[in-house]
Image (cartoon, rainbow, N blue to C red; front, side, top):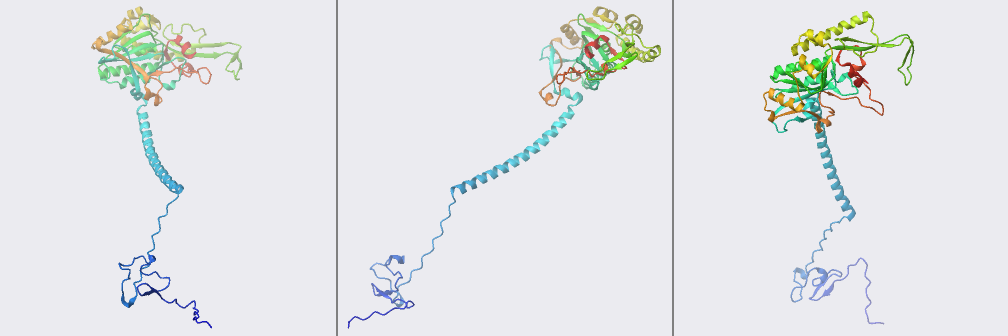
Length: 441
């Protein structure tokens, strides 16, 4: 029999007995006590736990839960977020800029349309550059030169010919737009075979209005030719000078050619068509007023009745033409009708009969005009339009106001003449007939 006392079994639900600890205190098993590093507080000096009521040491507070560490986003997500933010910001800025740009574009288009409207007609001259043709560019006085070149037509709807020309109504608008402050006077630079009666008369009337409105003079200088409608245009100028070798005159009216096909047997309407086959021949006739106006016409005349009807119309226009030149140049109408007819005259004969006032080279003529206008010729320049500037080109302006361009070839096809001066045989013209070959082809 053993002298050891057997150990007592402990129920799993029975609390464990308290154990002695240094200093005479007890603690439950597994509970950190004073001096235990797990207790979170060291023993006081001397190694004894502080005494408390009941002989039990204070129970230390439980550990405070540490706050969770902030979660650090991955590099890709962090970069993606930054990139998205920047992208959204840039996108918003782009939208704002596009809206502002759209507003500016609309405003610009409205302004452009308004400017284009204001540039219509004679307003386009505001976008034309001026070229000094005589005198120092720094001169303080100006004479405005307006070229009257090529065949005279009424306006742009008259069509185009193979050579350039002048739109009479546009030149009339230009003269009506000039003020006394714009220039000390106007010089018409004439080099024309004539053309439209209405276009010629429009320029002549506008010249008179300009002189009355501004009190400034208008001069004319013939550079090679001023025939028929050119004579009508310049007759009322204060003074007319011509360059050496120029031709002046042809005071007359013409209508035609009026064609007649006798005994037509076939008309070719194919690709190369337009031909007419006759057994009796093809005839043409011009109706004229002014002795010798149709010199060179190889065709036989119309019937007496047809000719009489058309002749009456032509005679009316001719009478107005003669009266205008006779009055403006102080020449007896009978001299024009009976002696001069519709002849072209050289400078000496033209000066003798009173069509012009003198013969000079261009520099001498410009100096003379400056002096006649009461200007210092050494401080005067003669300017004329050189056509549209860069802004004018942006507005689609392709020519100087008043000038008529020549027809141009299109897609390899020859230039097509559309001028009513060539296509209408029933329009009376103040036109030298020899000009038709080069203008109409």
